[in-house]
Length: 304
Image 1 (tube, helix red, strand yellow):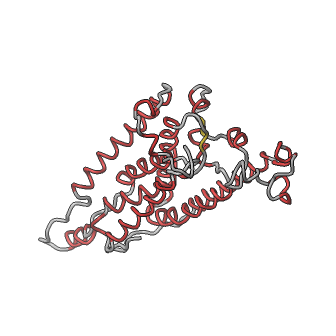
Image 2: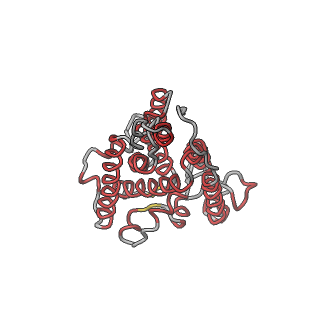
């Protein structure tokens, strides 16, 4: 991560990130309790794994290779499903789905990334701004997912997680002047984003949630994570203590103001358009014939 030239900024105590992690773990435990594999058809055949976990044992690997509950349990607990959101008027699924995970592997990977990225952002910008980015980016990812994936269910914090990555990228861009090793940080973030989006091209991974969350978080970063430009505080102190000293430089540069305005318009407009299209029952695949390739690429090893 980049180091700042001016280190006088307040560092916040990161408490929201561990709360998010604990909440997702608690939800997963509740889901597994309700799933109760031994009482399902798989349990009757003795296929639950591992058996010694009893009620908390996972569905057979052939059914859920991520070590988790059945799809019917996830659907019952609030997974994102287009028909229920649009036709069943269950709009709350756009939010609840980001707190569910398909399996313990899915949970561990996502929570590890949330800790690594969330702690850094929360320490620098506080829980309110990071919390808003996490929730709104997750919501944006759910909207795009529901518009394009209308025949399957979707769960996970990946959209919110990619939103934090997107915000980290835009924060680096809009606060470019205050960082030292900026190019190394830029390539690192882009590399991580590229890996996450590439993983999203595999079957059973919701890349539309990744893309929607990333774009939402990227725009929100320009709005919520703006810092005063380098040298502003020094010039302000100099101007206030010395008679005849040069006028203090502007707190934010014109580029930051421009990016703030454009990003604010795009994120509000994009979410509004997405919500309207979803409520009208629009199918994103009809409007974009090639977009399904962004979610999955067929190979000789698997089909989409």
